[in-house]
Length: 197
Image 1 (spheres, one colour):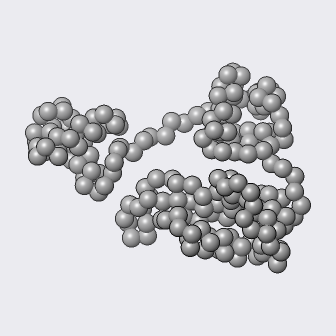
Image 2 (cartoon, one colour; image 1 turned 180 degrees about the vertical axis):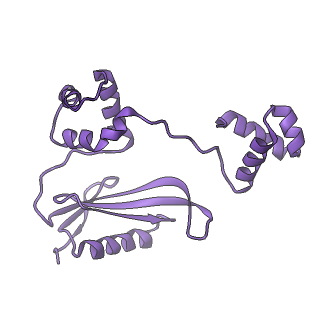
């Protein structure tokens, strides 16, 4: 897979007017690779697609999050994973917990009553294909009921107020009611107080 630097090089040479054959000679890449990159550039890709690096703990992510929400320390989580037969060091667990907390904004569950609270996340996930096969900037709306942990997800192509409100309506229809309080992880405070249907 091409790195960002080589992708940028091919893009720069293309913008300077070099054809595929000239770019192949200049970079040393084969014809198919250069043609693929040029097709991506013409489709509006700003950089090459990144191949995800598998992490051994990804297979146990749900369990790790559950243990975090139960208030276990990194040392205790490491011990619990060892009981499951996961052969890893404590430092690997510690780094994984840090990555979850920082990048994925995992939060510790606070005990609530049914229909009392929902948490809302609305985050950018990059370019994805829409129903017409066109690559577009994409956001994912997520509402999670705090008591049952039931999730509603919706893919959208803008983050306007109308879209944000419509996502809430769609989530309420999906759940069959409205929680008393909705909290957005990116906003301070509660912005909706209603009555569960």
